[in-house]
Structure formats: structure tokens, C-alpha cells
Length: 111
Image (cartoon, rainbow, N blue to C red):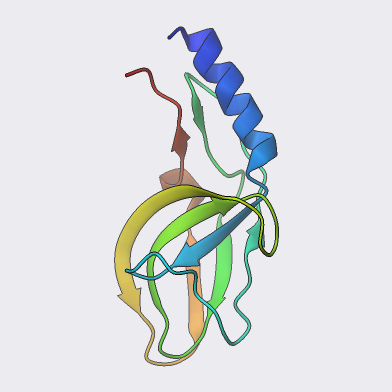
């Protein structure tokens, strides 16, 4: 695929994925406490890659385990478009987890 095609797909992805949520090692979204998905806006694409425009800070409940992120089409419910695994981090007590924009991306690459 051409760069123009990959950039067009990435552009569509910017409107489809409106929120990011965090999941545990089983791929189940975290729940409880003050946890909530975060609204996300995306940078302009470059060769089919989009990234959040800013870091996202999540409230994690006591006992929570962060092991990945997923892109969703809504604050609750909606479509789960997938995401990526993260280095697992356990929370013995409630805390925050910062998902770094620079390390978070959706890649639309030619196979």
C-alpha cells in the first residue's frame, strides 16, 4: 500500500477511536474506584502512524493491574478496536497510571 493510503486509513482511525481504556493481563478492562476511559485526540498521521496528542492519566483502583491499552469508540460500551500490551504494573493501593503519548501508537502498515 502507498503512504497516501496508509495516511488515509490513519485519518479515519482518528475519528473512530475516541477513548482509550486500560486492561489487565487477561485483556479485561479495569473497573472500580475512579477509573474511567479517557477521551483522546490524535496527532496528524505520518506514514500511517497516529499518536495521542497528550499523555493520559488514569485513576487505578487498589488491586488493579495495568497490562495494556485499548482504543474504544465511546466512553462506555462502544467498539473495542484493540490496542497494545504494556509492561505490567500492579497497584497494591489506589494510584495513577500515565499512558505516554510518545509510546502509544496505532500503526497502519503495509503487509
